[in-house]
Length: 190
Image (cartoon, rainbow, N blue to C red; front, side, top):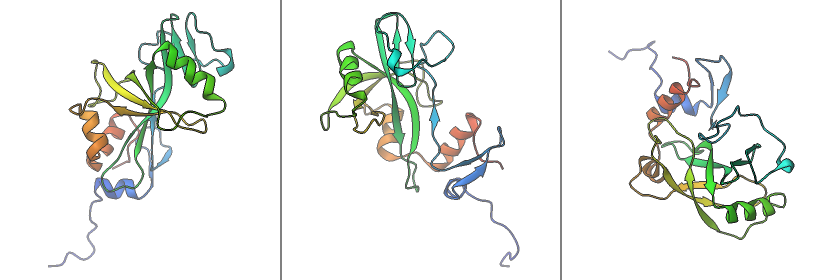
């Protein structure tokens, strides 16, 4: 028997490859590539209300779309941690925050408007946002790769045995990607 007329249940890769889906939670149409973003570093103790970048203060607390300062001692920049998804051309992007030393933070801010940084320059930092199943409470060291043209830096997990580093290297299975989107409330229906 051939099963004519039966519809095959779409696989996770099918659901993502379609490129568009109706969100099961917010009822908005989403598409692939789909990124998740954190509005502020997890340690930010206030409501995530952005000030303009040009109001940057290095003392006290400050939060804009691109920069964050806590107590004049801790410095953060918005970045992107990309994770390939097996079978898809475009990676998943996790918009998150990384620490920088004060010296590197000041260098980053100084070059921000021109977006002109030395090629292949990388700094060290700590990932400052959790990502379900991949980043918990323990700090995760990252390489912060600067990019030109006012693009957010890319983050690369520094420790090869971290689950997130394995995903960056090998790619995330599409079933896990759909599961991750579902747990954040933006997965495909059905």
